[in-house]
Each structure stands twice: as C-alpha cells, then as structure tokens.
Image 1 (cartoon, rainbow, N blue to C red):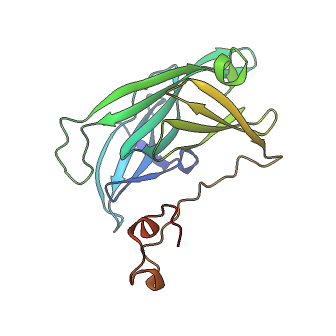
Image 2 (image 1 turned 45 degrees about the vertical axis):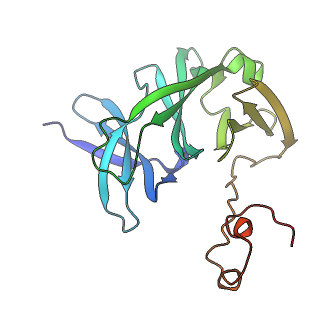
Length: 208
C-alpha cells in the first residue's frame, strides 16, 4: 500500500451542487512520486461521502478550475507542455458531469463529457501561456460563459462557448486575480420572507 498525503487545493475553487460541497483534493504518493486529483463530495455537516476522479487527467494535464453552471458540475483542464522556461498551457478543455445527482451515493450513470476545447491562441493571442499567467475566475451559473483574468495586462475577459467569442470586459489592475463571484441570496433574509415576489427571493431582478 502506498503512503500518500491529501491536500485540499482551494485555489481551484469549490462548488455546491445539489446541496453538497465538491472540493478538489490532491493525493501525492511519495513512494512512486506520482499525483492523483480527485473531487471529494462533502455534506453540510462536513462528512465526506464519496470521491471521484478529475476528468482527463494525465501527465500532460493540469487541473485549472471547478464550478457549477446550469445545475451541472463543470471542470476545466489545461493541456500543458514542458518548455525550457517552465510548463506552459496550450489549450483548455471544459468538461461537464452528466447524469449526476450529488444526493445519491450510487452514480454509476454519471459520466464526464467534453463540452468544448479552446486554445490559448484564441483566448490570449499566444500559442502557449505559463501556468501562472492566467486565472479562471468563474463560470456563469446560467450561461455557457467562462471568465478569466490574464495576468499580463490584468484584464478581465469572457469566453462564450456558444459563439466562441472572446471579450475584454475591463482592466482590473494589480491583484485582480483575487476575485470572488457575487451570488445574491435573498431567501434567508427574514424581512423578505413575507409577501415578497418569488423572483426577488430567487435573486432575480424584480421591479417593485
């Protein structure tokens, strides 16, 4: 049996799907000097219920981001190559876990499906990027949009998977990678629980 350490990689993010936390965990096997990445599923009491493998992982892949969109778990993997001045990423693959119910222990039907791949050339105008040259900030909860920060110029960018369009949204300035997406939640506010419009409680724009 190989001895290993488990490390939670919070920089990749975490996400709640079906009321369960999904957290990337690195397993470093010291004897073989290999590494495995799994996604631990944890309930609201902090009890680990199961774990499954990150999609498309091999010696040329790097885990980049985990998120939720349209009710489904998404992961983004970078395809990297080793160059003289360090590891570089040439392409990103966006994966979605289909037929998955986090509340069920038996998820044999769940499968990772490749949603789309996009090159660094299309995103950033470069054939390859250093693994620390960009950050995936968020994936839109209701649309096929992914948001990035390019550290070369600290621009916030979006990539539309449907139109394959890349947009520069704004310049954030130094330290712009430290972004936490805002997700409004009004249902827990007592003053709004009495007679408030349903759309307002769900965080949707409502004209009162």
